[in-house]
Image 1 (cartoon, rainbow, N blue to C red):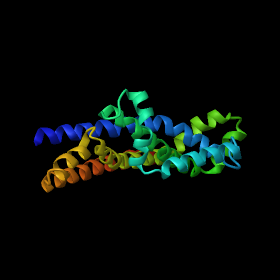
Image 2: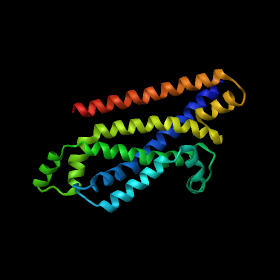
Image 3: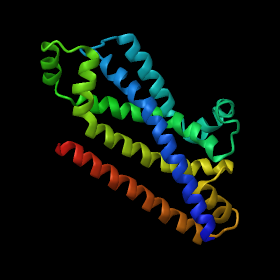
Image 4: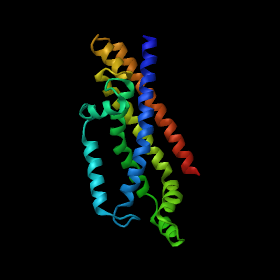
Length: 213
């Protein structure tokens, strides 16, 4: 079983970190727009804020297992399949983007308004304020949000094992559930706990380093 466990762990890491990377690329700009279109912010627009917020809430409210099934046609369009490790990156990314976007919004909202007003008084454009004030000041919170997103993706990737695509979830189902091998389930749980702990520890360390500077 050693080779099977290593293979499953590698597949889980691939799914989690690639979907986390794509979620960061998609969720960061969405979170910025969501924050800056709020009343009193740089791009105040109640309509855009309301629509974007509603879409994010709707996506986040769908259980991952249902979301994964619902977007199978989209997954096949993007990945050419719906049952491979690379295919699972698509629904994982779709599930993670709105979650990470919310964490970015929260981090940006914690930036003191005085810093923004000072930058505006100095003639900075909105994009300069975003790049030189908002993002640097909120980076610690954004990193913490990304860490939390990756931790959630570990759990999502385990649920994704139900479609037989790979990862620790598939290993637990194939050997633990169908073959009633509780030892494999226990090993899988321990590995996932260790993986989550590693992600959380690294994320916390990076966030502290950013905050201290």
